[in-house]
Image (cartoon, rainbow, N blue to C red; front, side, top):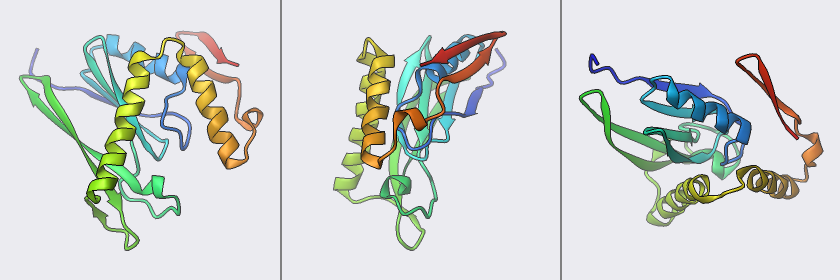
Length: 171
């Protein structure tokens, strides 16, 4: 009512995955009922996606703005531009950036820009349209682990989050 705009900046999620864990996603979505105007999550070190819940925009991971990691995915980020008017989010835009080998943050070439935007849109579409998100998420993790030679059982499962004295598990 005083024109303030409140952003919840949450350090959550699994490393190196574009998709939010279903339990964390549920927790983040529940925060949309607390008066928050916008939510931005970080921690995965790669670009995620976007969804709108209860009128609140949620941005899942902006990537690594400046990272010297050897993985190119860790060198991709998005700059999030929020236009706030009268205490409300009027519009938003993303601008892809990359960290080059000289550790300078620069605008990507057109092809790289399109790939980063397409990835962001792909994740956003899955968040919006996938009916059984838990099964979808588990499939994405299995595929990612297979590519990296890891086993799903090596992940810290079941993931436990405490909320309102109730423990939820993802098996």
